[in-house]
Length: 372
Ligand code: NAD
Image 1 (cartoon, rainbow, N blue to C red):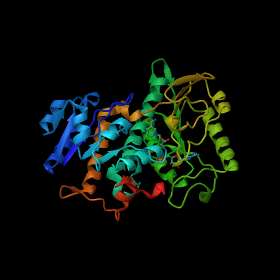
Image 2 (cartoon, helix red, strand yellow):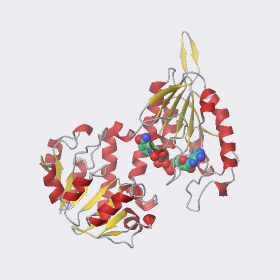
Image 3 (cartoon, rainbow, N blue to C red):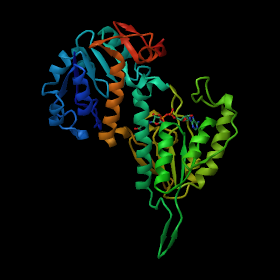
Image 4 (spheres, rainbow, N blue to C red):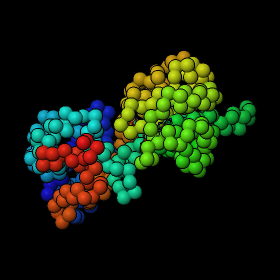
């Protein structure tokens, strides 16, 4: 079987789907790996590294598209490129199938077997394949560094001959994967950190990182689904939450927002009035920007100054740490391939919850229950 890896072409995309280390492991298992020339260059994996691991480095993109059995990418290839794939090719990448029904139709029509790295269920057995968590953790880490860079203050307490500077105060909203990493990074940099999430059970995790959990009485059954995921709050609960955030926002030098409700636009947590009431020079880093933003004034992909507050709406943060993001994504991909490939052949065993939920299309049909 030939596994193909393309050079990513999307703007600002610096990651590569497979690293030389994982290429080596796949080749040892009897697969052939073809990598497009310079595919890893932007994340500092050179063609020579791939050659050393036994891969064939190919200069023609078409050769990969038309001949591979399994195509690995980060972003979904374009429509024209999908049309070049053989029937039955297995495509593994971020697909965001719920948001792109037309893509799902196209994949069905072309009889491409597609697996969405964004559709891997967040269950214990799939932890080593969970690319969303790997990437969110990077985004959380990077968001704290951005905040530190944009703030015109020290983060840690500084005792100098000219006097003592108190530590900066950071508020992290949403304490899921990205939020917890943002908290940990702000703490490491010396900030005093507070955090809030509507799921009360994350309080312990927040506190174990040395941050203070902001308590708001929301009532557990109204904030999460049976599966433990966050739920959209009703109007009165939203008001309660905003009131609490408002109080804490006024005292914060940095706010990092990471709140997400699966399948919904980002919840609005920071209103214009709250921004007005923050101290001049404060910084908001809204990593939910691509998803609509947790702050009313966020502009995705831009840094804007509103009411003397800097609001950063970064997109594709994992790409800014492309070497390690590629490493983690590639390992996630390897774990998924190990589940799918049995004795050199793909085995779409839909009794397996991970394969069932991750497979978007197979043999001209929609498979994942999330699409039904
Ligand atoms: P997650 O599901 O692990 O965490 C989201 C958290 O938000 C959950 O703990 C949830 O309880 C909480 N939440 C939901 N509604 C809330 C509310 N009203 N108030 C407070 N908390 C609330 O998600 P994640 O993987 O950590 O991702 C977080 C965000 O980061 C998402 O919007 C995701 O799209 C974004 N992200 C951005 C980038 C980027 O490059 N900018 C990269 C990766 C992830």
